[in-house]
Image 1: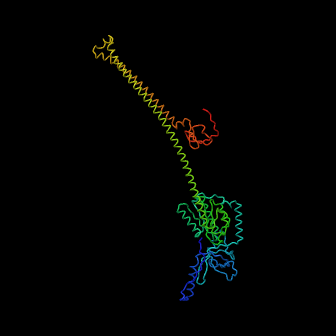
Image 2: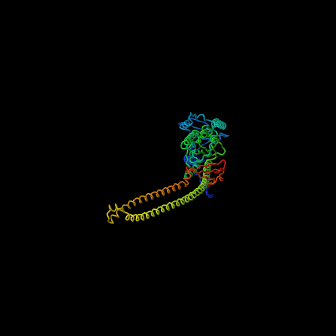
Length: 503
């Protein structure tokens, strides 16, 4: 729907110097009518809606001749008149739009909004080509239709359905039902483009006619298409905007089918129909209604701004709570780390003492073995002496009497004794080393058993009070929640009644 400029009157007031008198031009009649046509064509809009009474309707050529007269005139003989031509194709299009046979003769004598294209003919002067007709129902008829629509919507329990919807949490996709070439939509589009450039929202346009014979069907089609998009790709809010204009142009907004589509729309609908004094049925059933398109987009901006402010408040609250919890957990972990380090240090010191004791035992064993070896050498020397002095006659008879033979016999005996002593020493060393190894393994097992994981794995639990401090005595337990750290996780418990029993 194209928005029209207000009527403009062409003035030919030209200031002339006081000392000059402008000559009166002399034109031919054709030149005069041509100049008049230029003035009319430049001074009037290309298309315009006029309110008029259809005085007569007559068949003429490929259409109908309509005699239009100013409505509500007290003296018809002096009222404004205009002859217009209604092509047959326009009548057929109007019948297709309303989906029923259209009797143009039934409009004789009725008041209607007539969409005309002004023309000028040199012989017939100012004329109009009729592009559309919108009959104006009587006020009592409109009120009756409006009341019946409200009652029907109330009986179907959909009249207040939009009002029951929650405000959209995040507005990212906005649908707009609007007339084409509407100044009101241009203002809305400026704000939407600014938000789109900022990457905040995405807008979808659903053009529709708000005036003319097809306004009702056009609005229903646009709302149905917007509903499909809302249920499919998704919409967060729908705007229905229309700029200023005559209040009679709102006649299409009183019917049940248009209002029902808004009542059953899946997301909130905001209207901005551009009339502060006219309250339509769509304003009654919409989620929110405003006076102008600018106020409608302003309401959307307020919703986006309020949501952004709430998000920032929630972010700061979450950040503060997270920082506080992280700080408490850091202190708790630091306390646990200090406890583990102290326990590990004590355990390592005990193990070092035990290892030093084992080393001392090994050194003592080595010293003992070295002493035994020295004593064995002394015994060997003594035995050598004894053997050389106490050999029997038979040994002397069997062994050569040379010193080398005697030494060989003695050496064999002492060699066997030395082998026996070496095996005994090796066995003693092996036994001492095995004992030391067992002692070391026991010390390692004790270290692992005394660690935090080992302690928790044996069925013990680390009990922390609400301030994350470890509880060492039963008297410190209260009814406040406690945290038990077990081998496989952390649980929170509450002591209903505290009873201290001696162990």
